[in-house]
Length: 137
Image 1 (cartoon, rainbow, N blue to C red):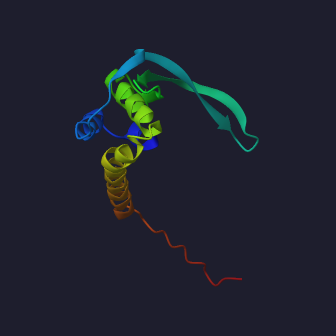
Image 2: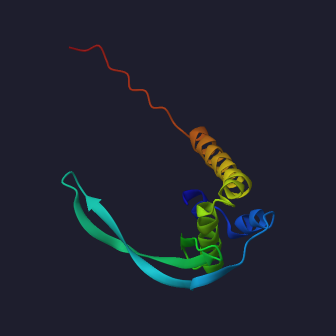
Image 3: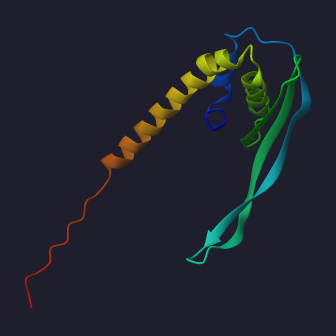
């Protein structure tokens, strides 16, 4: 689910086009809402409300009965529906291997490449500070 949440909706849709999708219905039309973000303060870990974030959610049921749920940050109902569809397909005996191989694995690889590139760009700006201790006293 984390891979799908970090992927672009267009990339998920493009990968799903390679599959012969079964008939499915929306159990919950995509809708937007808010969730409270919680944080913890200091060494004692006292919780506090950091703020709210917009999320989209959807639910899909395949004709064979599997139900999938999709959540994503932001107001992208189509992406939430695609995630829900992938979740339902991943639960199906007929489609789970195909979804993993044709949708999730390539998106995971793209995500790892993006993360590696970002880490390399960050590492290139790293400054190493060296403090010399004087030999006094």
